[in-house]
Length: 280
Image (cartoon, rainbow, N blue to C red; front, side, top):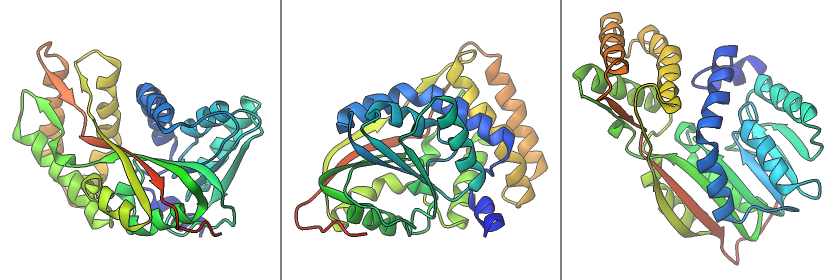
């Protein structure tokens, strides 16, 4: 079971990916914190962190809810959950509980959560509707589900443009779809949330732009370093395609007029409707 779970994570759970996720969280922390504020996450609440990974967001959420609150963090990777427990211990946090489980079928009996958070999770799962139903069962009536995820992933842009870039973005999209994910899940989420018993209160776009030498420019760079060799290995790209991409990306890194826009995302705040029971 452990080996299968580790392999289920698209980018793996090795040290390089753990470090990439740490950098990613820092680069997107301001956007996450602002969203937590809009969702009303506050001291004393009990929150569910879905697909928590190594736990970088989890520990920040735990500090937000404080010692009277609790964060239950769920992930399929034992290695990531072990990292979360190390982080929690280092920060002296005792209000975190890690659960080894798929988010599609939560292996936990708790309910009555005040809120739930999922960032870049639903785009990777085979049954997002099942995840939404699981969350609906565990939230209190009026509980808030905050989601930040991709839509129109291939609309990521590197300027000046080049076919080598578009080819890689298509390959990433195809590789996720082949694994059962949906890089455009954001466009389907409002309807799926309604069917799962939620009222969508807010839908906002989330898009960022980076220029060379800025901290955010390094975010896609680390992703390319890890994922492009995997795309070649699995046949979604050729070695020549990878070399062409790296050659053009290197040119953009040295071009003061270049810029990068992140894959378009949506931020959705949904509230559990009355009449949807909270059951374990």
